[in-house]
Each structure stands twice: as C-alpha cells, then as structure tokens.
Image (cartoon, rainbow, N blue to C red; front, side, top):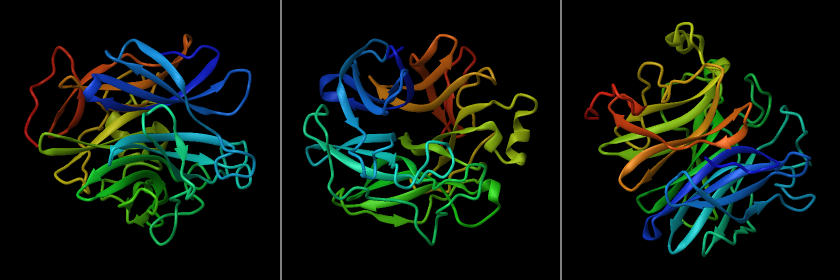
Length: 323
C-alpha cells in the first residue's frame, strides 16, 4: 500500500510503462495542516512498494482557472509524449464548500513523466449545452465536469468526464460525458456515452478493453443510486463503492448486470475511486482507503472480466465467460 505522511490522500490514477516494467501512480494529496492540493507521483515495480518522485502538478497562480483545487485525471502516451488530463476549480467562480464549484478540465504534457507543463490553451473542456447541465440539479448543486479519462480510438483521443445530462429524471442524470481531439489542444464536446442510467453522479469514469468486451468503470455513493438500482443490494447498500458496465463497443450501449459492484466490502468502508491496472499480463484494482489507520492507496486486488462486468478474484470465482 502507499501512504503519504502528514497528508490526506485522495484519488489516484496510473500509467503502465511496459518498456521499463514499472507503473507510475499520480495521486491527489493535501497537507493535514492546510494548504493547496497537488498531484503527487510515485513509481512501483510490484504495485505494493512505491517510491515517491517529485510532485507532478500544483495549483495555478492566483486568478488562474486552477488556483483553488486540482482534481482527478489520467495519463496516456501519444506521439512520443505523455499527456495528463486533469480537472480543477478556481477561487473566482467557486467556494470552499462542496456546493457551487465550477469544474473544468485541462491538459499538461511531459517528455519524461517527471516534469509537466500545463497547456496555455487550458481549460480545454467544460460542461456546455445542449447535452450537459451547467449548474447541477441533483443532490450536489455545482457545475459537474471532472475526472477526465483519456483513451485513443482511431486517429483521435477521447476524454470521458463525470458530468450530468440536461434531460431525464433528476436522480438519474449522472452520466459519462465525451470530448474528442486530434491534437490534444482543441477539444470538441460530444453527446454522452450510451449507458444504463442508475445514478445521480458517476465519478472517476474509465474505459478498458479486455478480450472482446469494453468495460466502463466508475464509482458513486449509495445515496446517489436510483431507488430502483439501490433495491438490488437488498439491505446491504454500500455508503460508496466501485461499479462496472459492459458493452461490445467503446461508445456503448453499456449495461449493468446485477448490482454492478466490483468488490464487495463492508458497506461502511471507504474503498473508493478504484482504477484498473494491467500489469505483467494480469488485471488489478487499486482504490483509496480511509479508516482509523488514515488515508492510503490499497494493495492491488486481483480482478477478472466476464460478460457481466469486472469482479474481484475469490476462491469461488467462476471462469470468465465470453462477452
């Protein structure tokens, strides 16, 4: 597991460097005694032991679009460079409270995964009509546009973004927004992914192809689930957890099977913002944990994929089925 003494730990995201048999972890942290959040950086060769590296990103100068808080992102390699999408808020149009924040997404670029430069075009995407709410009508009244996840398809790069549709039942408007670019600087905001509507918010969305299936992974709070989906848990609705949906295409339609929960855990446990990592031919899940021992990144949880979603490997796990 990974800890950062004297700091609160939040979401983390990963880049697998196959050439050097290593995994880079980028994570959110902020000092316990107060101070701005930042993107920390660590490297591992076994997903258990991590070596801390220099801080990757910090909040911007006063008056900039990212001067209040940096939020979750992702990293890919393209055309010989490394690109990080990240989300952020500013003092000019947000408050310190959870409500009324305006979230946007920006980009940073690096030649070595160590030193990062923010693009002058930032922010590159935000919630816009006609597909997305500006001010959220759900349980949290803010401009939802965070946690950009990058993936390549064809000659373009796409962002998946936590957002809210501007139509449909209020409690089921949580969605995964899409944006597309061919140069990483100019982005076109597209209609959202097609998926089952089960939640008020779908945080930290990710997309993975395993075999012939595409898997949409995200996390949300139990209180954000629609009543119909919450009923699938019976009396064991988790306070927060991680979920998957399955499709035969990267753009859906994505369907949830059963509860969709990836790892069953104590309903009161904080095991959240999980991300998948493929390393040495196997798939693992790593999440942020918070308990009496403090905040940390979990040890890797082995998982497998089948035609119903992503599941933790257990002694009774069934063999994976076809998509």
